[in-house]
Length: 158
Image (cartoon, rainbow, N blue to C red; front, side, top):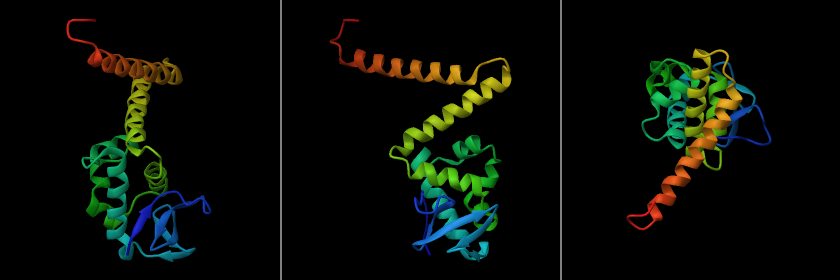
């Protein structure tokens, strides 16, 4: 049994496929081809699919990032817990979208940055989230461009 978390264009509610069949969730209840499917039967395959999608977004040490972005307790996103209890449908949809993104690792880092921005604006309620995020992205791009430019300059020049 193989679950692949990814967008399914012909089924916008889907979180992916199970052996080629459309897989959807309502809450933590799975449906394959519209029929209920017990967690006990798909738990291990779901945990593997979550690991694969999360690894695409954040690398092999994804647990902290998945917890941070989702706001779920780190223990809730560990493989054996996922196999036993599943994950909420909203998080599976996020993982499916992210895994299907053309640059999943970049999206994963941007999601972590978004979590930081949201946390910063929670601490400073008068901050403009959009402006902070926009300025942060512009600053990051400029700093990386500068670093790469400096790397190419001959020694002793600035």
